[in-house]
Image (cartoon, rainbow, N blue to C red; front, side):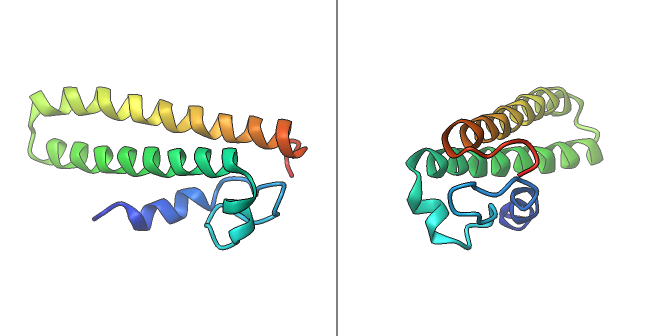
Length: 106
C-alpha cells in the first residue's frame, strides 16, 4: 500500500476551507490557490498523514513478525507522527478561524 488511498479518507474528515467552501480533497482549485498558508498547511498535513500511515503499516508488520526490537522503535515513531498530524490539524483549524473567519463547526 502506498498510503495514497487512506489519505483520501483522513483528509475528508477535516473542515472545509472557509475562503472557498471546498472540502480537503483538493477538488476545488480555489482552496489550493486562494490562500498560500492554507496550501502550505494542507501539504504538510498530507505529508504527515502519509508518513503516519506508512509507520502504522510497518508497525503492523513488525507486530505480526514478533520483531520486538522494531516494535519498540516503531511505536515511538508512530506516536510522534500521530502528534505531528494532530498539531497540523490544530494549526489548520486556527488558521481557518483567524484568517478566514471560520468558527468551530463551520
